Image (spheres, rainbow, N blue to C red):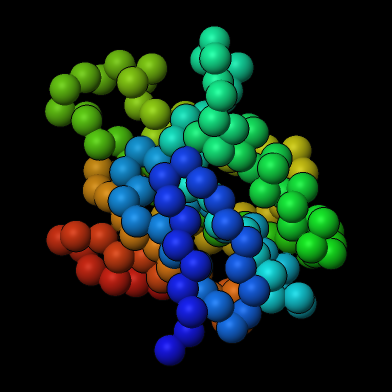
Length: 161
């Protein structure tokens, strides 16, 4: 059995094969995996909000797409991952409260997905697979040895991207 690195909400961790990395309860939050298949090193972030500049006192950098991904990216580069080898997989970003409002400003899931895609495009990192949107929560586990992202969703089951 492989050691599992756990990523909490508003957190990121770095993982090396033969370890796997996992995060629970991605509703409107987004799970972002950046990995290099040649070194089998990856990072996984569990981000809650799209942009730290919208919050007056954004003290926890790991809550936000812009600051959390920057910190994780910088740490991966310090681990000798080559930036041109990095690719991504993303999951989450659900619209968990659609029954209450159609106000898009309240759709944090879509905002998180857009913020992540914009950041990855800026860095020229390709998204190899994604499972985003809809209206259910996900738990994800990534194996840097195989490059597979396993997704578990209540009422949906388990599948791999």
